[in-house]
Image 1 (cartoon, rainbow, N blue to C red):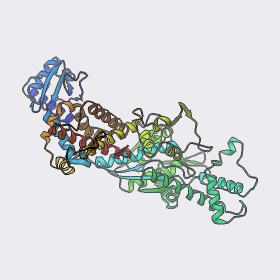
Image 2: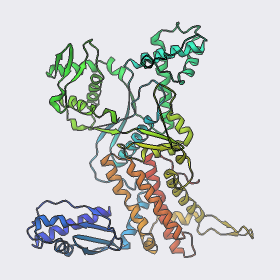
Image 3: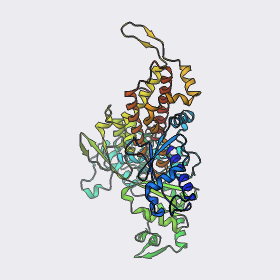
Image 4: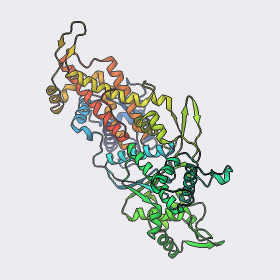
Length: 573
């Protein structure tokens, strides 16, 4: 990466200057931290490093430090200038040619880091109750989680994606009772959900159970709603909801390696085993008839109940067992995507991990804000138990690509305003359209380069600028010197292409996917700007070849980035 290259040049220059005694009181073993950035004034150069912070150790003026460092730089393929404490670097075109050559050589692997430490990661996300359709909040976790999985895999990690099914609580019984009411209604019985808000919370009155009731009646031939056993209704409704959720996830390009049932976790004895293990380690105590976990000894703000006075477990009890089970399956890192309302839950889970002898830092929790759905400038209110806007509804309205892209384009800790009308718009204002159109436009240019052209007035055909074989040869046997022909006019664009490597590195390390969205929008802008000012297919054959090679590099980089986001890269629009 060019940023690393220049940063290392500066570090080597500092070492040489210190050894030569040119950095005042600073020795070669003194620690320092520097950052590389782009100069605010592009006339100064392409990259800059501010060494002013070294003055605290060196006890000499920043310009003197900068000039002393520059004396020890190689100066190979770049020139330097000093402004105050800034060392500015202006790269030569040979480095731009190298950048394009790397993209064409690596293709689908372009941007993939080499030689970085990797881990075996279990990524858990969505993990919804099997009690109804996904709402749009689930859609955000699905889009972001699957994109993060793609990103971490591209980085080089081994990633296992898991969906934790919350099917062991009272919500499944509520689902079964709700299905009984819907069955009764379909059979013409005078039954309905309670109108009292408190009582209504014990049911799921959404219309989505109507087709489930119809299916149950058809398959079981019941004559009245009192016939079915409650457990049978619970199992039937849960199976239907799980099937709907899994089908939607598949359509939404979200793949889970395992759907882990909380009920199975309980039945396996692992919940009780982890409880007994905490007891054996003297991590529990009794108070007011309940059993409390000493989580405050491990950084939690208070102790937590894990077994109630009536003998039933709290949610935390199963979560402790689940996370210990994850670690015992041999994962180096656990990453969970939870809603922001689980903020206080993180410390208690980490406390349980440490109490049972594991490293709590192996657990990372990404806390995400919710989604506000905006239609015609107004926010749409949603609720789990009433008629709601589902993820299904949203996908049907704007499409999979737009839904995935919009869900991923803001940092996970920011509330997302999803503007439906804008997401459907085929204009530059819509970020996903803008990026996809850039890819389609590049593909169109490459097609035109090997296609005959028809004169609409005379009907005469003009031969293609080059054959497909010639284009393939240009790419497969690429001579990087070809790029020198267009390097000056395409410098900003090529530097943006080269930046993809550092974007991947930082995005994976910081667990962010919105940075990929931001990058492709910036790359699309650079491409559109270049294309509007420079003809790709032209009479100058060498210049045309140079720019066509550049088009392939743009197409490759956009496709790699969009694949990570789980968004299609159309060749025509």
